[in-house]
Length: 112
Length: 107
Image (cartoon, rainbow over all chains, first blue to last red; front, side, top):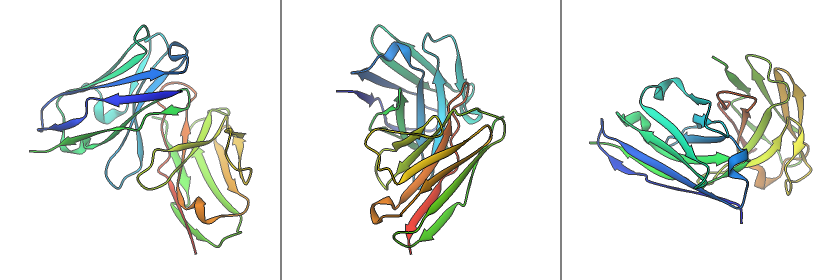
């Protein structure tokens, strides 16, 4: 079965850090760009970051540049999002996506 | 930075109506454009990729067209189960920006 499974979400205080993970199965992970997309409560979809098949190119939405880092491990068929200096406005469901496949999302709540 | 816009932001139509949603890219993206449908509380579902290719399993009443900067999603005969928010997304290279979404409901 083709699937992406995210993990690592939770409740964190402003200024804190979280590391999201996404494990892929059932498709050729190493041949696909991978992205993180988020959706704040009641808001639209926002692309956050993506990474090329071999990890040589990475892009970020302006609001997370310098705070978030995307990475991947093709041997483990996994992609990661290291989130530092978290803000209240980073509160959202975070989806992992690639090869037209989406995970079910993991919830990140930033609150004191 | 590349921007994606959509119009209208919302619409209300009757069952059986033809519905058209427009997406515009601030720079040319060839046909690297996808359309998603998202129902409340659900994961987005891919409808169309490469601007006009229907994803397997998607009803044929959905169609897409366009190239370059201007794209259209058409629902030929709106059904009650089509109530959702629709998003376009560019995926040529670099940032994979989404449009702001179009909320569709039944009149």
